[in-house]
Length: 172
Image 1 (cartoon, rainbow, N blue to C red):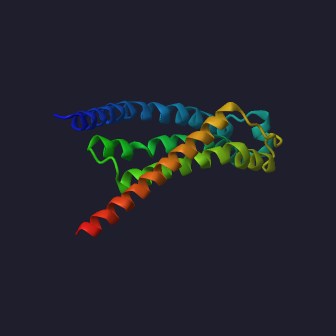
Image 2: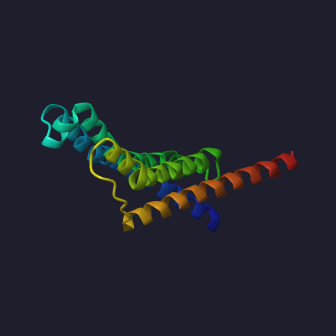
Image 3: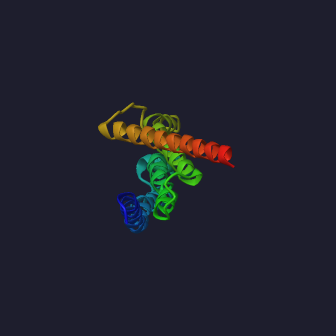
């Protein structure tokens, strides 16, 4: 086995390990977001705090949904990377499926950023929840870099797929 084949096998093995690890961690991520969300929805609907009782159950539930929307979008971005690991584990390092998954994950992470910074706080303030305050913290920078990087990788892979396809079409 030459150097290229060993590097390919190593990359495939690492992708397989990441695939198994993410398959174990994704349910934990979903539970970490979903269980508190379900608990808070229950509390505002059936045992409302004074602020929730004042606004009414439907509005209080909507405020809770809006407050969890950024976390759900960020978790969706992580989950959307699963097809990439499958493709890489099977040895398809440049594929339409992987590039599309990268681009969708980047868009979901970007949506999480906009939901966290602007959409959720504005909507919550319009519904009578907390007054609008614009907060920007280091995690937002990390989310922005993650979104941009993942979208860029998807775009590069998409261009590579198109280039390889054009090259193959010329040969045939």
